[in-house]
Length: 176
Image (tube, rainbow, N blue to C red):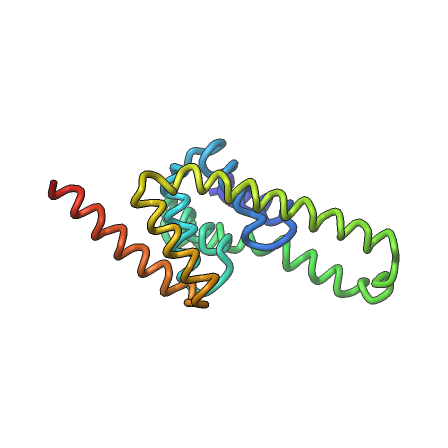
């Protein structure tokens, strides 16, 4: 459980940019380093995390902790991933107003935003390679993307609809 806490504390400590920016670190630590989940399981956790209230990385930490050590593991992983942010935000809030107009600070944050965008793009490409397979995957992807961008459908409804469509398509494929 100590390893679980340290891992999620580290992820929470070294991630800027929110939940999606944490995805590459989550994948590296959970799948590659500790082998607590497979890539497919992690993608399932991301999907479920999108449908449930809260930040995706916190939800993933809760899922992994619970999978490994039950309710106590879920609680510890959740606490570990949010604790660095709480500490950092408290410290920043105490001193930020004094330095808000500092040019060096502004330039530093602009650099961080660029790196966060690159991390998110890397994760999207990796998820694409592992998640979109065969013509059925492309159909579901195009429908989901269209629903989000052109029809402004809720992400929750998109995930539910894609799940149902994936189930139907796979059942038909299995029946052949």
